[in-house]
Length: 439
Image 1 (cartoon, helix red, strand yellow):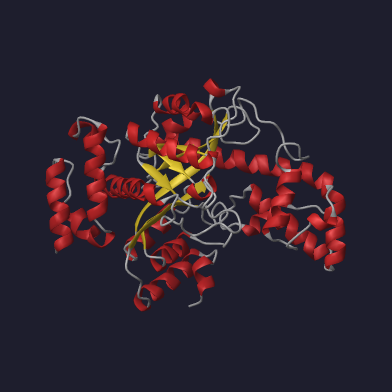
Image 2 (cartoon, helix red, strand yellow):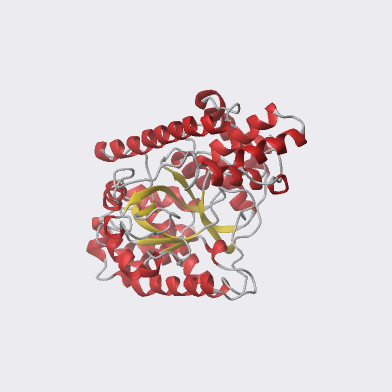
């Protein structure tokens, strides 16, 4: 078994490699670090990690909890669930997309240069067997993304000619299941240019002329982060030839995505960039807009919100928004994304900037692990009717799910599933967890 087998596009190959690894490898003790937001190769992971590979690496790092999030698809859900259970990793599965927020149509939120458009999430999905209405929404997200990509390639091809991509031949082979992103497009352009201009001097000259920058600005050829980021910035983002300014019809409304997430038994989740945009400077108003249609959790990418050892406005914003999630009782998730070269596998929660918040991220991860387990096995998730009937307020609910998530590990799945019932009260469930984990 090679490490590459864990990332093979053929699922059976990955599963065989995992089964062998599970028999042979000993993992280190768990430590209180988490990454609950990592993209997989279903929507671009810069290391090519499959859901299985992410689970393996999370155990190798001793993570307390690991979660995957992919753009516009749930393709990795079952694979992640089975692997996390086999290797005893607490976890959750999410989906991310862009939405339109009518109330903020004139304010930039967390998609730079695009007023009213926001990256948005659902967290805690536990099955791909979802209601027909939800499936139609999910299918539309996938097809709309593909159409947007193909239109972009057409425009960028005209600009970069004679470097042109064939979407089916050059882009889709980079994905395991046909869900390409802008980062796949950038990688495809970089690779094809490298094959067209095998001499570095010729390749540097080509990119310099096409992208309108000096040759000194062309770095890490043929396909490193500097050149792929430059391709993206110059051709696909605002001001680039491939960019088309979105309008109110380009993406679903936040309320519509929240409805989809709720239909799936998952948790609508707000995402935050850095607090510097006009929209995020009105974060309380923005969060209340989301909460009005179901948002009940919050996601932050910590690493981009501080410079180690240098207090600045972004760090102040980070501290303030984490306090807001605590005040509102919104479970907080954090992760590194891993969809851009150089991003860490796990945040440095021992750093001076993140250490004060480590317990908050850990608690949020426990809550999502608990939600996922209880929702999958008995429909007793965080936003279920069962939860609504059990807890008088969000504080009591958070305390229960956090305690469950802290104390229950997937190695107890079979015993838990055999005895769990939605007829139980919260205290009975807690007693069951104690019994299961002591067996």
